[in-house]
Every structure is written in C-alpha cells, then in structure tokens.
Image 1 (cartoon, rainbow, N blue to C red):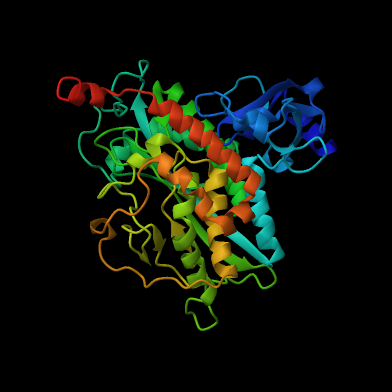
Image 2 (tube, helix red, strand yellow; image 1 turned 120 degrees about the vertical axis):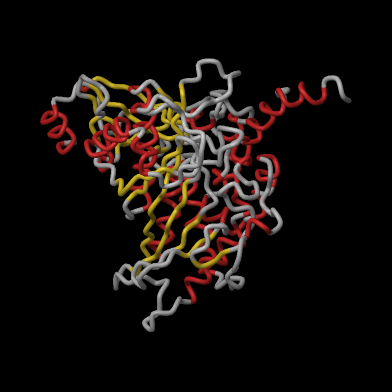
Length: 444
C-alpha cells in the first residue's frame, strides 16, 4: 500500500470513493475516510451486481449469487486512482476489482468480463487497441419525468431548432461547459482527443485517444460521471440515454479497434504487402455472425432500441463497408499501420466494459474460427431491411444464439445479465404510455 499511502499523503486526501460498475455501468461502492482504507479489507454485498436500472434486485438473485447474500472483496486498481475535481475537500476515486471470498475474480463483475476477454487475447500473443467515441445530449433540467425533454440553452439564450452537425458556432454555444469539462478531464488524466457538435440539437461527441481496452473502459466510466457533474454545475443535465428525444437521433458509443502482435508490435489487420489480412476479414465476420446474439450488450435498455430506425444515424443491419457511415461495421480510411475496424452498434447507454468486451470477443472468435466475411457493402445501408432486433425482449431471448462467444465472456455472467434484463423488461412492460392513452383509449 506504500504507493497509495504516499499518493494520499502528497495530495492530502481526506476521503476515498471505492468504485465498481454494476451490470448497467452504474457506479456503486463506498465512501471511506482515509483511516478506514485498507487494501484487502473492503467488502460489499455481491448482490449489488444484480441490481436492475431502477435499483431493484433481480428476482433470481438468490439463485445466481449466494442465498445468504454473501460479501465479495474489493481490491483497488491503483492505475485508476484520481482526484475528484468537483469536490472541494480533497477526495480520491479508485475503481476496484471484485473478488470472491476465496480470492477469485468475481464472475458477475462486468470489469472482470472485459479482463477475461483480454486474457484470451494475451494467450494468443495479441494486444487489442480501442478508441471510443462517445455521444451525449445537454438538456434543460427536467424535474418532472412526465414533461418532454428539451435541448439545453446556450450562450445565446435560445435552444437549437436546426441541425448543426459539426457546427463551430453551435458548439461554442456551450463553451463554458466545454472549458470546464476539459479542465476536469485533464485533472483526472482522461485522454480525450477532440470534441464536436453532433447531428442532434445540443448533442456533442467526445473522442478518446486510442489505447488499452481496460483503461479506456475505465475512462469512459469516469467520463460519464464527470460530464453529468459539469452539466449540473451549469444548471443543465447531460444524458447518455440511447434516444432521449422524439425528433432527434440517438447517442452512440462507436468503438474503433485494432489488433497488434505483442512480439513485433505490428498491426495484424495488415499484411506485409499492405493489403488487409485474413485476420482482418475474419474479425469482421465474427462481428457479423455474433453481434445479433449479443446486441443486448450494446443496447441494454428498453430505450436503446429506439436508435435502430432508418435514417436515424444508427445501423439497422449487419453490413460492413469501407468509409461508409450507414453500415454497422465501418472501415475508416487510414494509413496501413492505423488500420482499424469501427463498431457502430453500441449506444452510449451501454456499460463500456461490456460493450468493448462483446466487440472484442466477437472478433476474436471470428479469428479463431477463420470465418469469412461477406463482401463489403456499397451504397446506403439505411435503404435496406432492418434486421436488428427491435426490442430488449427479442435481444435477450437471442443471447443463447452465441454459445462460442458466451464461453469466452463467461456463461455465468451472461445468464445473470439475461435475468437482470428480463426483470427490467417485465417492469417496463407493465407501464401504460401516453401514446396508448392517446390513440387507444377511445378508439379500440
């Protein structure tokens, strides 16, 4: 603990947030005074990993975890230690790994699922590299959930009414918010690259610098907390819902990924002659074959499926193509060394650990099985049939279709995830919506 103790003393830290991500990517954990922080002594009920997005416990949690609701151990990953810039009293945040009481990595931890996939890459002598692009909306505060959501008002005092994709003046409307966000990111060593205005009203996108998948998932997890706090300090909300407003496009988390040979440091998606390799096409084929079965990892909420509509800036089928933003698997134009595959299926509401793990797992299984990709799609894929599932229920029912990938992710976790999502869907399905009251009350 000397490294941590020295850091705490140097920064004069008074308290530490011991953080973990549940299945939905929600931050949970403990706030500890420094004199209570001991490396291997933090415990927390393992059942919190089985909470639904509403805070309820999965009905089957006693069958999945222990009937006695046992503790699990939390161990800090010191590479994630950061000062929290929005708290006046020096306070640290550290992401922790979950272990069973026997000392094994806990199978129900989403961070451990990603570590499990990365271990499989390590065994093959391959290092995965990812770069997430995250989209979100700035909204006017919405105290009453029954009220419609509205875009946040910028410096002009007016909210946007027209599409301002990549608009410089549009993004400058939120310059004070962006300046504070960059300040908070710098203080936490979050490796953000650039920011731009997206298609939706008051919709922004942040790109992260490419790097280790676990570190990038940690950064996205931390960024979402940070962005929410910055927005609140400017009297607005930041939302990462997949599609928060009726007439605006959804928010995605595009995941750029490449693979490097650990010994040579070379990108294995490219042959010596500069052409795409067999591994490149097999990786794409793995995404094509297994993504439909794992769609709930990219689209984990009932709202997620509102993204998948024609001409709504989201993929609707399993095509891939070169520099084509209408497909779900895009190959950006780049130098040979920077050759990468962009997975466009994930919504920003996804747990970053699970979305990245799912994408890397599908690709790796494709390589192992030497799958063959379909021909690259040319044209507008939005004009083709919608083949993705349209509801959370359809997606979770399809989870069992991806047995080879499930083995890599961990069957125990996937089963638990399915049951948690089944609980969420059933809870949502009991709700009678405004649309139903408006169109069915007096007409059927």
